[in-house]
Structure formats: C-alpha cells, structure tokens
Length: 432
Image 1 (tube, rainbow, N blue to C red):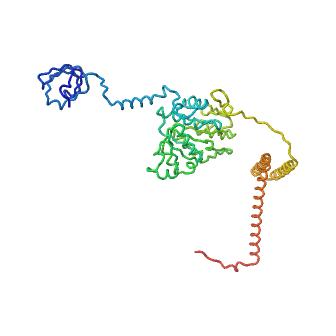
Image 2: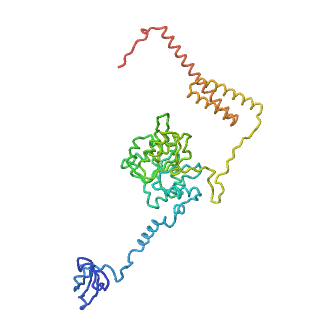
Image 3: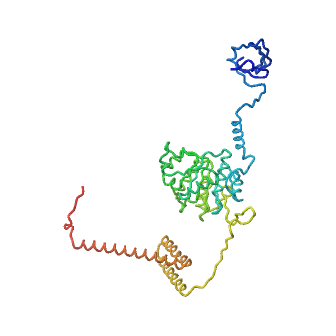
C-alpha cells in the first residue's frame, strides 16, 4: 500500500501497468486525485488518474534516489565482512600463518606455500626428518585450503597412539575441530555410516585396516583431503616375482581412490629396497610407479611428488641450524681386568654360537646371527645391560629344557603303559 503523497517524480510504481514504471510528472487535482505521467522500460509514456481507493493496489519501489541505503546496517556489515574474508587470501598470501597460534620456520613455510599449494589437486609425500614439524605444515595447508573454499571434508588417518595428539595440536594451534572416530562413536552413528555424518575426523590406522565392514562404509564416501601420518606403515613387499600387499597398504589404496587431495607424512619413506619404495610411491600415482617396481631396479625421479629434508638442512630465519650439529667419533678407553675378562667371555660365546649357526639353514642362520650380534651391542652399552640379557637368555633356555624333559617323561610313561597293558584293560566309551 502506498499513499498518494509518496508518489513523486523519479520514483518507481508497481500497479499502474503489468510491469514497474517510473514516474515522470505528477499533478494534483484537489486533495484526493493525482494525475501521474509515467514511463515503462521501453520508454513508452502513459498517464492515469489515481484516487484514494487506488492506494491499496499501489506500491512505491524507492524514493527519489536510485540507491536508498535503507537496508539493515548490521546485515550490510556482516555481508561485507564475509566477502572480505572470502577474498582475504588474495591480499594476504600467508593468511593461515597470521591467523594461527604458531611461529613457523622457513622450511615449513616453503613446504606449504612453495611446494604444496602450487600442486592442486595435491598428491604428495612430505618426508622431512623427525622434528621438522609435519603437523604444523599440515595444519597450515588445511587452513589455506579452507580459506580458499577448497576444503569441506577432511580425514586424518594416524596410528592409534597419535590420534589425541593430532586433535589437540590442530585445535590449540589452528582452531580446527576434528572428531576422533572411537568405537562408540562409530556404533552410535544415526545413519549407520559415520563417515557420511562428519566432515572433519581422525581415524586410527589399524582400526580401518583390520575391519572390512568399516572399509565398506568408507568406500562409498568421498573427501576433499585425506592425510596419512606415519605413512611408511602402509607398505608392500616384493619377494621374487610376487608382490605381497599388507592390509595397511590396501587401505592406502582405498584412501587414495576416495579423495581429491592425498597427503602422506613419513620420516622414513625408503626402507633400502628400491622395489618396495616404488610400491609405496604407487599410493600417490599407481600408473607411474607400480609398473616401474616390477620391471627392474632402476630408481625413478620423485622430486615432483615428494620432499625430503634432513636435520642438517633445517635452518632458522637467521640462517643458524635448527638442530645442533651431530658429531660421530670413536672414544677409546681401557677396560678393567674384570671388564676385559667379561668381554672375552662374551666374545667367545658369540663366536661359538655363530659357528653353530653356520650349520643351520639360511633363514634360521640369519635370525641366530642377528640375535647374537645384539649381545655384543649390549656388552658395549654397560655391564648391567649384558647381565640382564644373559640372565633372560639363561631363563629361556632353562624353561625350554624343562619343557623338553617333561615331554620326554610323558612319552616314556605312555610307552611304559602301552607295554604293560592290553587294549582290553581300558574299556571304551562311546560318546553320543
């Protein structure tokens, strides 16, 4: 409803024609009649007399100015702030750093902003040495993706003893709330599939790898990012021409298939076998790496999908080393007469056992040889260490000898009974 007095030159009116019109001129005839000249969107003019009873069918769109600014000020401020935050990463390239409770180091900034953010979708292995702060790098990457609107669902898969640590670090340092998928939480799922109900979760590695029912639920979901901590546990091995896939490795394949960004964290990506390493790399790109592992021992280039920095390369902003320099050198010292006798006795024992091990098959020989080498290492540690090792070994041998004697006596007793009695002496019992 619009009063006739509010109809002025320049305003818009709804109700004079099938479409809104703009008032060109007005003329009053007394106090109850208004003659209005208007123009539609095609520029055609029209004129009409309006009476007081026409006020109910009319609506004034705006006042004389085309932009009235009469909306709610709080809503306008909220909308403008949301739009500013949405574009914040364009004006602050390190937004996640400035909005998190951390003091990142140079190698952490370079990993996120030079290596990872430039590779979207990301299929990457972060393999820096322990202590480099892979949790901080992951948190920065998560927050940058969220600011850019590229991350709505994220799953972190870690060993069971690290789940709470991940939850605590992400909340305290980045204000990111992740829910740990416990047994109770999984079983109390309303829909029956907990992975469809949560957007940010932390799952335990072995809980997923050993439970096929949970894997079936996980397989029908999709994620923007999946992060796997201690990813070297998801390994496979080549024996001859046969590839042996572990349950953890098969879980890694599943996770790789259901996510757009896939980030693996490990400090030991290579176990010394090139074929096994390339199988591990196939979690990132199956077509590129798994075939190479089957065809030969040739190393492949991985610098575009993996970063590896050792402690010696990690620096502070002032250029000083992050970790103290590691110096390895041999210290000579003289043994006391009693220590010398102990060393000679243990060495003779190890040599004698090695000679006995030479007579075993190859697999058993390697096992015994490794165990006996440990004794020498324990001897170099301290007299107490070698004493405890020898004491435990003696107890195991005595227990084994007692078991052998008990088994031999039981066999002799059974043989003695069979010689003295006939089968007729023992009535048979039929079980129904």
